[in-house]
Amino acid sequence: MNARDDTAQPHLPTRGSSQGGLRQYNERVVLQAVRMHGALPAADIARLTHLTAQTVSLITKRLLDDGLLLKGEPQRGRVGQPSVPLRLDPDGALAIGIKVGRRSLDVLLVDFTGAVRGRWTLQYRYADPTAVLGEIALRLKDIRRKLPPVQRERVQGIGIAAPLSLGGWQQLLGFPARVAEQWNRIDLRAEVARLTELPVELIKDTAAACVAELVAGRGRSVKSFLYVFVDTFIGGGLVLDSHLRAGATGNAGAVGSLPLGLPRARGDAPPQLLSVASLLNLEQLYAQAGLDTAATTDARALQAPWRTHTERWLARAGAAIAQAVHSAACLLDLDSVILDGSFSRELLAELLAHSTRAMALYSWEGVRQPTLLAGTIGSDARALGGALLPLYANFAPDRDLFLKLEA
Image (tube, rainbow, N blue to C red; front, side, top):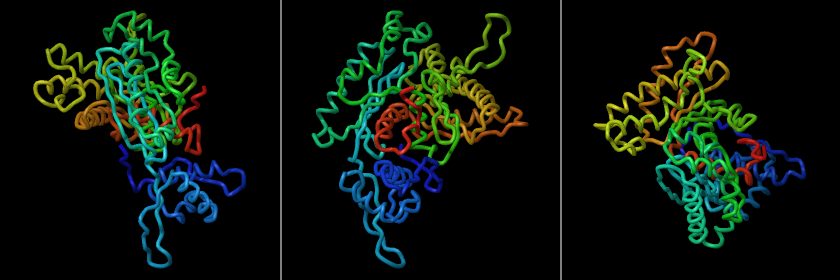
């Protein structure tokens, strides 16, 4: 989850100011520099943040006293005193990420470095509001009970990642109409807020996954990218100039709704990307063959007898994703397209290969072909992205790094 390219130069803002009155901002700039570059001696922090050595010395002393930084082992250079690298203290802050999905619920306890300290998962055929909220209440109580008082006070908040319409596609997903009606009436953020005294934020699930990739994955080195996440339904997010772009309604990057062709007649709309390249389509192929549909998320998907049906899905999904990438590239000047999903890394590699081959069938004249890359986070991406929201709200210099939540 914390994988990164150590040779890449992070693009997120780490520049401070030596003017007075900016103490908190400069502290956040220093923390951001350490988060993005790893353990650093004070001299390197000063160079990266453009702060004076004296300012950095004062800031790092405060951050060490506050339990947000830790000293590493002194490192001797060729001349002068040994340098002491400073790194984030994992216990410095904690956050809770909750992914409410159409097939499962994930609750993560995440530390200051973004590492997962605890994970709880509930699988279900469809998301029943009563069961989902009951499980969330249970897990929040578990976390509070298991944490010692000192760490309990360091929990910054809760970030929820959920589809914009949990009551949508009721017939396609095969759940009762009453459940759809319940979700349409529920304010999920408000319901979870009633269960805790912690601040609670809500973000679209695929946007949350995009946040995780932006902060803890390839976003460290890729400035502008379309993010595509394959789950029950395929969806995505859009990052431009190292910022997640939400759009007017919070739905920017909603690649699942992209049409795959032109209407043939009035009322005969072309299929959408989500109707071809979602894991639900693979589930349906397995179900028609009498196979366990849970194999979509594990290694069995590439083993007999599932393999034959998986190959059929890969061919169609890869071609559809390639069309979506081409359409996006014609509208946006992207460095890359990052593809990830809630399945095995082996199946991700296969989908990436099929999509890459299909992209070669298009004419790229007049438009730059973006690089297609594998995401680095996987199934935890949505819940992790949710947990990163309160951490960045309290410790990052740029509060609008992801999106304006108040909008």
